[in-house]
Length: 172
Image 1 (tube, rainbow, N blue to C red):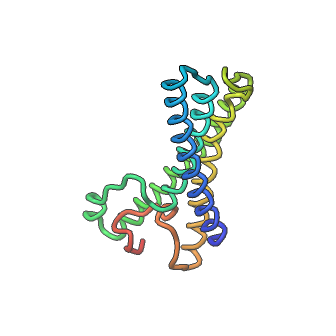
Image 2: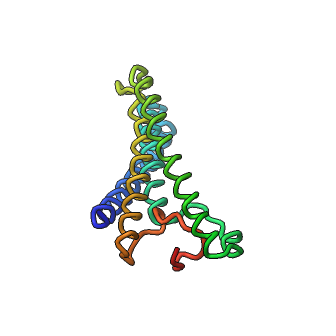
Image 3: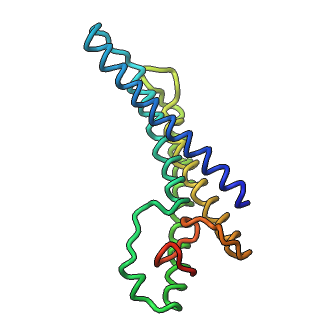
């Protein structure tokens, strides 16, 4: 499971990077063509918005796996090992709960938005919103993969699913 998570992380990293680059190119193209040819394409903002949602949630899942999201260690340094373990369990539950909320409510919004189309392209806007439950599912998968690796005593577990307080190298 850890190997699959590692491969998936790498794929998502490159997909989000490619998406970001595509957004950049599309918007530079839109500005240039509007300036030089006085032409504006209505599909560029729609495609950019669609890609932006996916870049945010795929990239967010990668950042989550790598432990690159905001983290404050001040309180963690003040806790005893027992309290740190309890806090880690609470943080894991909160992150898992948040991921489940993203999955469930993101799916509901996606279903609603499938009936609303972008104006510039004939694509339901629900495909943008689909990034929310997919991102939540990826975060939950990474957490569970890391939990499984830690329960087997594997040392290469990611920072994210560990949901631990304290320094990255610290055992929980």
